[in-house]
Image 1 (cartoon, rainbow, N blue to C red):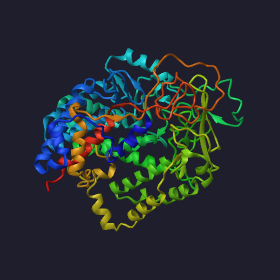
Image 2: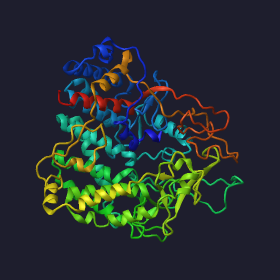
Image 3: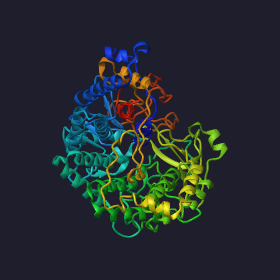
Length: 603
């Protein structure tokens, strides 16, 4: 369910969502009726009541001990995170448990009503339970205990062909997909809100975890691995079937080119930026000036890892130490569908990070090599032919992966029908690419150039004024932003008095959302993905076809999520309507709009 993953989830908060017809409370009907529409204080009161009902339903009925996954069938008989989940599980990875918790606390800030704080508090305590002794979090937690979690990994997780991070249980914590960062931020907010000591120890452990995991020597100094502590049994290669399709070219590249990727310096999913953000929040809210030095080391790590021109970009991961004759700091491969390469979307993210670093520090060294990175992005755009011949590249500007040295695009494919008879490979062929991991990205080079020009043209006085508002230099506490759920908090949002606009929502839009709750007290949404139930491992018998090559799922033994309206063209799959369900992301997005509505000034 990557399309409801963290990065797209942040955009859902400002995107209209499906409101399903419902039998409504009389008050909700009145609010949405053109002839009797409520306005002003009456409608705000009605809206807060509806928000309270929705929060109480999520907390009391949908959650499991205050924890959340991503999606639920209405009767809670099947639940999903990024894969199918047990009812006793919570998903730490957004838009799961921390995302809903942040929404609850935001609603409390907008309304002052205790129902929201109590729900946020319960979710925070669920994260305290889910926190590992080392201080970080795994993607998921099972309240039924370790044996139940291991069973999930050995069955559902192990057979998700395209979800390699869930195929093995390491028992350690991850920085991937902002799970640890989002959880730690919620714990911090709850502690700051009322000084509740039930969150204090968990917060101290989270800070200690981030500091302990940070690389401390060499080129990697200041960066973070994907997982910590290192697990010495981590997978370093994926199987390459002896019997392969007859159509597979002989010269393809495959496998995990740099072995275990969990200990590389990781930029994927903005690991470094997320950890900097959490530490800066602690500087601002707790007065922890000792955390500034680790932040500055992290900022320098990103700057140091930029590759020399003309390929002045970054990869998803970089070697934390020299390996097989390659120097520390070189771009590294990761999962078997993430080849050793520079990556255009990571480069875009890291350029934006450098802009934030300049705003926070006032130091122009963070802008000095941005033009080189922009020139490299201009040099490796997708061609018109590549876009025309691959529908999955429509609307994209750049290939995801760019080969070191040649500057040619690399494209990833797969063969087979499940994890036992299939594998991933990459070559120069732009056709037949993966659907679950895009071969192309939308990179706004012109927008980045404009932003660079604006920052580079700032006068010394303007830079000094901006820098004075930074938690890096201000000795006075800087309040945390009051709202986290309407959009992702950026580093520049941590400047003192930084504007953080809420969604602008009309009376009619708010009334429609209230009416959508009906007597159910929850919103129903067409779920974006379903899964095949686990029925044992897939067959090793070779599959020579291409039906699963550009689909999100393989055969019926693959437990990966997929869009039921666009399944593989292979029996017994048939297109079918997506089921209605309860979506954590949709709840947070709808509540963000209602928070914006009730928090806006009257009139």
